Length: 228
Length: 346
Ligand SMILES: Nc1ncnc2c1ncn2[C@@H]1O[C@H](COP(=O)(O)OP(=O)(O)OP(=O)(O)O)[C@@H](O)[C@H]1O
Ligand SMILES: [Mg+2]
Image 1 (tube, rainbow over the protein chains, first blue to last red):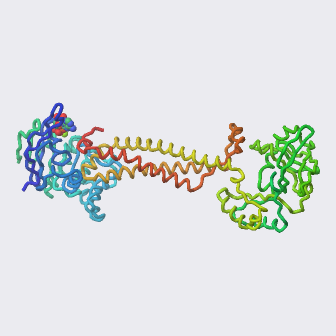
Image 2: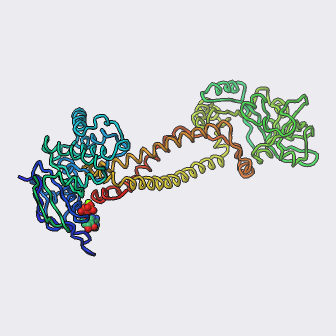
Image 3: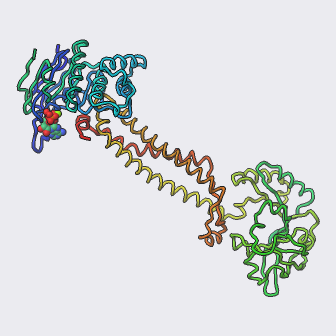
């Protein structure tokens, strides 16, 4: 069974004035262990689609099922808790809490989940080992490079042991070296731990390494290819 | 005419008992009576105070208010110290002679000549006009008092707060005399109810100011917190996106507001404490508005003081205000949609 399934998903902004059909009748399925890039020109609806899948936005019509749960039917409190326990997010602008250290940023989400201190400690160490930033545990985000911050953001997204990770243009603000470094880490997590990644991108270097490419145009899926 | 209370020797011993009541700083006895004072030019009614100079010094700072002459520091017989206002009225100076006309204990009118040795000027012009001071013995002789008899015992406490408790103890000490109608015990606010009223009004005005300041404070807090939230729209949006519940976001902002206000509040209270301590030591001279203050019996030289209770009271009010003021910014934060908040450019 697929872990994510969208059914005739539509998102129309400004229904009253000049309607923008940002996501147009999208029906997609995602399997566990996917490494999928959503691509397409600017304004084609990538961010909107990811927000709908992640329960950050509600569709105008259509449904999103995650592990069989119809998240479009959840109320505002349930959806927040659902996100906390099932979905990992990586944002374009890293979005770490500036006053917390790298370690605290990652630990924080586990605190929200109510995980005990010892379990948090060991998980944080394991994650920082995986992202190769063991020596930066106690640095504030301001003392980390963009690439390092985004790796911490990936660690944070993984910390809650989500079913999958959604990343909206995770490399948009990174130079090529940091981009390939981040991709190495994401691919390794995908291969070794079978972590599911769904991300949007403009970047040809990222597109090259994706396993599945979904192309959007004006909110519609125009291409859905398995590469390699 | 003022009733002349006469205390016997036995009762005088009780003065020592008053002295031993806790929080009593000093005690002195006075012979107090109404009298006529006249000079070559004119005459007027006054309250004459027959005092024990050393005892009086421990109770009243009148001796520091002399503008001419001395405070009974003289070899002259029958010295008298009068207020400047009265001196003006009688057209007398230091070394002038005045005549006191007074009723003795038996009801006979007697006279006595006194020499002005000192002229005082307090902040209270009414007082200056209506009070004259002579030696207790001189007055006792004049009105045929026995030695050691007196008509008034003045008690000075270490602090105003103890007024009622000490008054109750003194009343208990003299309960039989009070019952016979030979003696009354009166606190300062019974003697001077206007002063009491002014004091209470001051407290009420202060409370009104506190409320106004707290309202201004809450606007300040709302403004600061709204700015803090606007600056962190993306951070808060991210927190909500990754799964921080609305209750926790609300609590986070409320706690932040309280910490902010507490930091400011504690700092402010500490600074107030320092300023009050310093000005309490040095005093504040309001001589520019002295006339107004003096005419209602207030000194133009004040020593600020604030009880420990008020520090806690104000701190609690600040916390309450902060909690109240945080509701609006916190609600504003909760209205953020994570999808839009994250999108926002810095
Ligand atoms: N909150 C909104 N209100 C109105 N229109 C919106 C809103 N968000 C997005 N849109 C519109 O929806 C369309 C899709 O936007 P979206 O951000 O999903 O595109 P995108 O593929 O992520 O673009 P980019 O590559 O530039 O990030 C665009 O035309 C955009 O203008
Ligand atoms: Mg986008």
